[in-house]
Amino acid sequence: MQKATRDESISPLSELDERSQEIFRQVVESYLEGGAPVGSQTVAKELNGTLSPASIRAVMAELEGLGLLYAPHVSAGRLPTERGLRLFIDGFLKVGELPVSDSSRIEALCAGAGRNLREVLREVGEGLSGLSQCASLVITPTQEQRAIKHIEFVRLDPGRALVVIVDTHDLVENRLIDLPPGLPAHALIEASNYLNDRFAGRSLEDASRAIEADMTVDQADLDAETQRVIEAGLAVRTAADGDPSLILTGRARTLEGVQERAAMERVRLLFEAIERGRTLRRLLESTLDGSGVHVFIGAETELFALSGCSMIVAPIMQHDGGTGPLGAIGVIGPTRLNYARIIPMVDNTARAVGRLLAWTMKNGTATGPGPDSATLLQSELDSAGRILIFTGAGISTESGIPDFRSPGGVWDRNQPILFDDFLRSEAMRRESWRRKRETDRSIGQATPNRGHRAIAELMRRHSASVVVTQNVDGLHQASGVSAEQLVELHGNATYAACCDCGLRHELEDIFREFDRDETLPTCRGCDSPYVKSATISFGQPMPVEAMRRAEEAARACDLAIPIGSSLVVYPAADVPLMAKQHGARYAILNREPTPQDGYADLVVHGEIGSVLGDAVGID
Image (cartoon, rainbow, N blue to C red; front, side, top):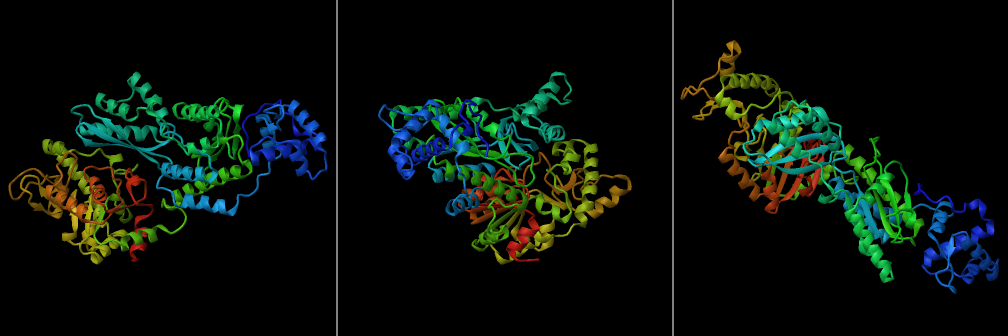
């Protein structure tokens, strides 16, 4: 157990004889138990009469002279000073195992906690406050301090974009930014690629400083619009924005233990200082440098000097060989705390949260150790009548089809061709067909995987259910999902269509000509040169009928399950949320966290084919 830095003038135990140590220990233990000044008669009774009250009073006077005890009134007994409490905690306190009843309640709190790090810490903090009867506090590194894993800019409408920031702990933060008028679509893509290429693994603070330096010396190689997008997306919060990474609950419990009005006012001011200042953050961050429980008593720290409070806090360490603490958790209460009980309580809570988060990252379900994720998902499916399945690229990667948005995905290698560019430029149309030829080699060899087959089986069991897909690979049809139960929001890549008259063209006929001399197709019905893959390109309007059917299914279902979708592509990502808004249960199955995890009733992060196949009961 680690302690706060303390005044070296405190008398070490070696300077107290055995009798003085025993009397000191009895005074402090009696005070911590009863909360009142301790007299010589009380100590004599605890010592079974081995020392007379007069002898005890003489020793207590010596201890008072050493600054370890004090008398609040002339005729009163003695109380330990803050120095005395520090000496008692360091030298006398015996911290044993937490009672099974308390440890079981802590494990239960963690097992039933929320679906992301902040929810877990908030709910467990509330539970710790209830167990300890103190205020609880939790700190997590701010988004600016956490290392970036991936950043994406997603346009919501002409004037706004969503910045999706995923850190190396797979925590997701969304920021809404305003866009400059007339911003071209490529600026958002270039901003995402620039940040992911240069700053993955670095904090937002580091990235912001480096980008500012690059732009100052004109080395960023970005146009003015893209620079403005990056600056808005990486804007570091100021103190005025509040501190979303500090969670404080149960303040009333600490105030309940304060009797004097003046003392109550001091404690109230303490909590105000905590909420508006960074003193506590700096204090807590000092605990993240090591492991074990830290105890801060009263005037040992500036923050608690006037309030007469103590803080017991422990870092939440990663238990999977990770790179450092995920945060810290602790309690604030009066200096008269049951340290022997609360120190192991805080320690066990921090360890339990660490185990939970490590288990979640490894096994992919945010429900914690307990019922496996497939069983939980099966329960949701079995209780549903009309199901909306919403699929993204993640379900098809297990069939060997690369996704678009992940690091190393298609858009990391090639900038998407905008619909307007396809119409405007013959060169862009030719490049589009070159890429189509390349991607079709993987799509053409792909077959439905276990996840596709599980969805097809669900559609067979639930005839009123619907699959709404963002995918264009045709694997849902190949797995057996009927056209009546399938809505393709982004089209279908297994054939082509004329942009003018809509006539279908088979790819085999197009590639026969294109492979010979890159001859571009023309529509055999209207002679239009605008024949493209029957998919929705960037900047191309969404299909009206497909969106109508998707929204109709969302309003009618009683369970919506996005599967393998990053849920950042709008307006498609609004479809499952619409189901939630109309009262449906909401479960998310994806390998990575999504911006909508906080809205879901169940979140499972894992291999899609394995989890879904087990839940449905197919091989």
